[in-house]
Length: 296
Image (cartoon, rainbow, N blue to C red; front, side):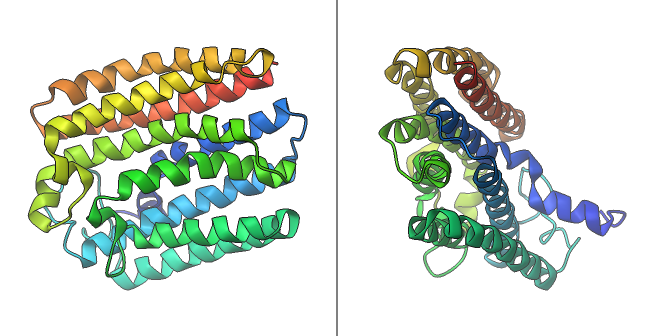
């Protein structure tokens, strides 16, 4: 750890492997806009980069606040956390968090200029949720609400918001598509919290996995995969969704390896592989859905 360069340390803190959770819903929102003839490149790219910055800021905030609250200890089973490991000082990590959120706000100013005040609400709520996930007197992640917020912000809000900055209107089918990808993104968090159930319980971090236990968390994971599969079928409506839905459902074949681990793991460390596999599934699902829509 002492040999890590500052750049490498910041890359670890940013957790780039989590960015599929942002990129997938934005790709779907952009593809839906293209299918409806309202695609706009610059607003789409701004939504993509703004979302990525918010996710990176949230990851850095979690690194800092989980350490401050004592949830990240030497007993954690996941990847390196730079604050807990002493690679970067808490003050430095906190400063980095605010720099990233400031950059996200700058991107948001451009989107507000294009799409108006609804984007102000979405942007403020997204950044506030990112910070409040582990910070403040009522941290979302510590109260068992992380799954709900993950579903809402990475699902309907991300897809519908991306569509809105291009079309300047909301559309019902974007919300439906958001439910599918939101469920799969939430499945990433479910695996993470299932892995950390014991250490989170000991640290007083009352995630939903801690509250409902390992057995029902596994059931939750399966149900989220089912939602991801059902949504493209429900949205099947002629040329618009047929190719996208078919490819998205096909991408769900990638769910089998992580599902098998989640169902039968003995050592929680095994879930690190399932976590990586679920993140890959989210990326493949979003890309397949988007490509299918672009083929129309």
